[in-house]
Image 1 (cartoon, rainbow, N blue to C red):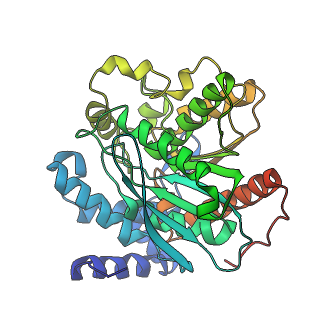
Image 2: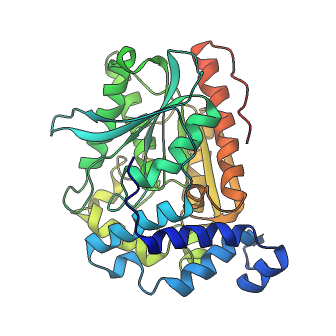
Length: 366
């Protein structure tokens, strides 16, 4: 893909990587005193990143015109991400009832075909983000989990409010399962996953496909991979009071996302918006739920994992206590994002290959 990033972005990317290589004492001098909230200590690299962003970003996305806010998030994704080499990366179009949506397929070298697969939805509050926002994570998971990843560029609000993103996510999963042979993936080993709003969409796909399967034979995901998911827009859980100001995702930003995504605030109680409110989850796909310790969404993500467990759904809950929201996208700086994704990649390898009845592939070198 052509490098179209301007010089200031390239310099910022180099600076971000340079910060990650500084001695611990220098990082601490930049970050200031350790940040401790709710018995948790923020990861030093995360705190340095927060400090640098606070000094260099004069306006955050919700205070900018929409196009500028989207450009800012796209720029940050590239600055803090990493373009890990993956042998096959190609853009595709997924047909939907409302028209085609863009997607991108990632497949590492040497994997067995048909392979296990992950249909992945980027974050951005259903308002921001694109295929570039998920590129770093998609490459990382494809490489380290030895699977095919298909990232989906669903329609965004406010131009396309709820339920457009949900419809696109369902259409994308259905399309990949129906065209499994074309994509050289195993239809019995296709997971859904995503980060933040994308994690919300993945959880909703798991819920809705399970509901449909109760009524008629239809495909369901083999697994759901939820990074820092939005699971309840109907109310604010206690982590909002703890982490709602001054961190990577604020309470005001979540309010801004919600106002753009939902034409009617009453829609927040719809389980396709707030999967935590679903009446029946007993037969949804097994889940790996990863939450960030310093995140307004922490408590609702954990509540959803507990809800699944209470319904006897296999669910792994992992709290990465030292990181902030969306830090899994920052694979180019620091060790904490990579460690979090390596754990998730391991979960995908085990969950998907056992579902398909294949031999678990050897983990790739870090």
